[in-house]
Amino acid sequence: MITELLRKPFSRRVFTRMLGALIAGAAVLRVPVGAHAQAVSQKQAVSQTQAASQTQTSSQPLAQRASRHGPVSRIAFGSCVDQDKPQPIWDVVNSAKPDVFVFLGDNIYGDSEDPAVLQSKYEQLGAVPGFQQLRQQTDVVAIWDDHDYGVNDGGLEYPSKEASRQVMLDFFGEPADSERRSRPDGIYTSYVYGEPGNTVQIILLDLRWNRTALHEVADADKRASRLAQDMGPYDASLEPGATMLGEAQWQWFQQQLHVEADLRIIGSSIQLLADFTGWETWANFPADRQRFFNLLHTSPMVPTVIISGDTHWSEFSRIDNSGLPFPLVEMTSSGLTEEWQAISPNRHRIGEAFARANVGMIDIDWSVQPPAVTMQIRDVQGAVLIDRRVEF
Ligand SMILES: [Fe+2]
Image 1 (cartoon, rainbow, N blue to C red):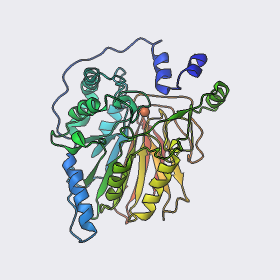
Image 2 (spheres, rainbow, N blue to C red):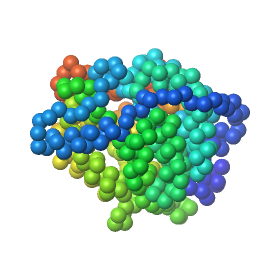
Image 3 (cartoon, rainbow, N blue to C red):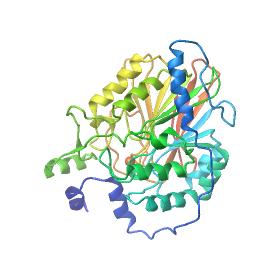
Image 4 (cartoon, helix red, strand yellow):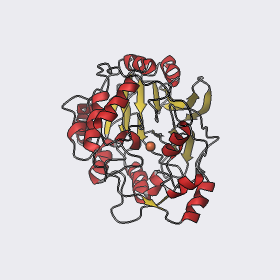
């Protein structure tokens, strides 16, 4: 099996599939997904962008989207759902009654250029009772990662991305006239919840549509050495033009960082703060990673946290010397069903990492100004694995 991994691109997913093939498969449910309209309209993001430019010339309040539960105080998030597996994690999520749930990608393991296959797999997810309950009681928003995009570690070159996005946005109830469906460079979006004094902005970046080439280590010995350190096959992409977001999304992101908010949550399908791991992280694109930090420094100072997925383990990372007046923190929650035992090194990790199915939870303390957040990871029994309070 190790030999096989050395010949092929290292794929956590492929490896997990190889293990999974040894285990009897779960029954596949095929019933139509119910009609849901809880995903938030991209019109909101457009109005936010318009409002962002207004804020530079006026003090007009921003267009805001009221949560069904009033001010948002609990946001759950997660990633990496194998539609073929039992999903007991939804019981933990639903009993916590979050105001919003954020899917951070690999929301299904689509892994097909055929949109009918993706649709069928979304229907499997949509038929899970716990997921159905989530959609009934919680605002659900989503961005994708590689497997729901359609291919392991896929990027700019992927030929079926247009079909993939329509299937995904259909599933999550995106309106037919949403800009996310027609924009030429991806499905990035943002949402604003609450009122002045308790406004939360959630920004979801598209790290697939425009991502330029990854570079793999060719030397077998070096790959073996990497693997022995629980590291993957990639080297940094240093060539001019190497990018995660693409220029248009960078411009949009910059505008979003001028939207008035009391708390900003930036959703990144792959890890931002983690050290170079050789797997897919922002560290493979150091120029873009630095641009991200620079943009935070030069934008209005708003308490900001990062949330991410993809890894199949959970961890909390912190950088104290980023230049911001507060530590920059990131909670990684992965996966809602997936678990990966070979946890990569990360010198920015605080405390332990956990290779157990999990969900992330953000509780916002609006009783202090600026607001503080408690970021937790909970396992399928509801046990709290990571618990960090962040003050700004
Ligand atoms: Fe992924």
